[in-house]
Amino acid sequence: MSDSCIFCAIATRRAPARFVYQDDSACSFLDINPLRAGHTLVVPRRHVHDLTDDGAAEAVAAIGRALHETALLLTTRLDAAGISVLQSNGAAAGQEVFHLHFHLVPRHPGDGQLTDHTPDEGARLALDETHRTLRGGAT
Ligand code: AMP
Ligand code: ZN
Image (cartoon, rainbow, N blue to C red; front, side, top):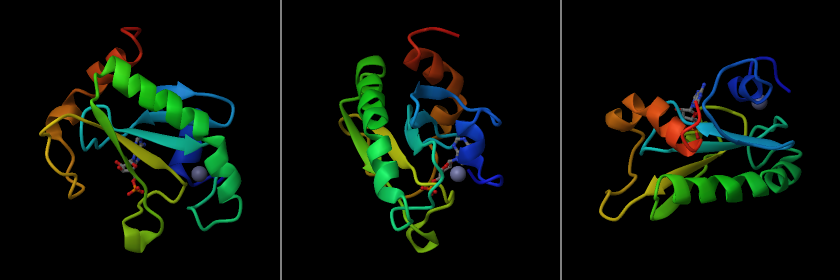
């Protein structure tokens, strides 16, 4: 764990997040700047910087179930027709949080290309509502 890492803080419940899925080795939660409604980050609980870091192979293995379960929730609860997976390694690739993570972005026919990092303002304003829907209406 890294004391200064926001995703470590979320994974240990020291910082808030809108959790979508959790197990012993991984968790997923809504991105606060969503590219589309339901944009979710899947994160290993163990801190590794990126895919080049020592321990990255184990960290990737540890998030397999979380990737699957999160994708299922986005599909069944948000009616996603598809899911784009984004992942950045290093500042040159646009990585901003240096704790390995995968972006799962729900997609619908005709919703345009994911060409930049401009959040969807409507999706940002609807984060709590999207979270309720993903949790099956639970508060
Ligand atoms: P990346 O560019 O792949 O490192 O993406 C980092 C992502 O983390 C961005 O999309 C941010 O909006 C998101 N993010 C940063 N802080 C938080 C947070 N506290 N809760 C949820 N998402 C966050
Ligand atoms: Zn971390």
